[in-house]
Length: 449
Image (cartoon, rainbow, N blue to C red):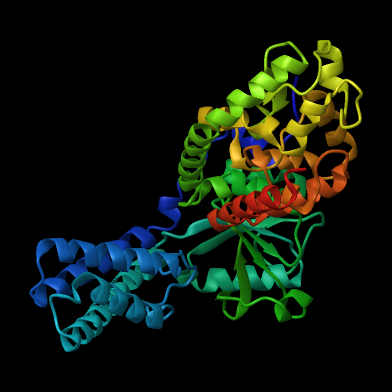
């Protein structure tokens, strides 16, 4: 069975070559090196021991990372994060060697670090801009060949410091007013990106989400450059610009972020803890099932997982066995007469979900994510519910944003898809922790659902 997934995921799964972001943005690694060297020099100058020097270096990198100090910028400036840089230096110095130095030494060390780090960053940014002037710019594609698009392209051509070299436009019309060619229509984005080696895509004005996601999946940096007269300008704080034309960078996919591996670490930790703690409960549940149904306690069912891959989900059996066709196509058993009192108790307390912790440990599922559905219903809902197939961009989960808002069981599929996609688009590790805590609170307060 083939399951529809997002356009960007289809591109990735077909093995299209991804381009290195390191070539596009070498500054982050250079800035990390600058901060480590400057903090090491500062701590050594204050007479600190090796372990305190190492701790101070790790802390200042961690604080600057949290504050966005290493985020790539179109036009980098040493003063962009100057105050945060000073604060991170002070906090790192206090935490690393406050016991081994006076407050005055700590304050002077923070000032020295800030000065050295600003100087080091200025050197890095000077080298980057010089390289761009000498041709180390990123091949870019402008979406939209109207007056705003041509104005944006002309600004980038005249000022190579921004590091974006427009090769041409994508537009449904011919476009006028620039020497750059219209390379194709909007639907040609995959072909044009691959043919011309494009590494950045800029939407001049409003764009199509599907095209933006496809370009991102191809390894491109994606930007939105709204015209000054557009409404979004009054609602969003723009941190980047091209000659004062506002510029927004598209968020990276969740799985491309540095925090993504921590989701798996959190999953394994919770799954192992949950399986150990719930072992006595599972044993009691197995006895209850055997006394009521007489069959094996475990129920296995084929579901659709991450990027449309099939998984075998494990649950506790709460009703007498049914044939395979009914199991795959029956929507709900909430009011089924075959569910006995003990089965209803397991469902009401959500104890029937506990074996899915094993799915999490295996890597088939996550603790938090869209609920996995059976292939029969995935095919049906993907045809009839807008955005339903987009749910498979994230590993499926035991609980999720939709579930903690009451969308489980026989509830609106359209609403579930909207809630799931909202969670995926704004995913952070903090959101996973929040959903876990709210799930636990819901179980304790209502005895499950």
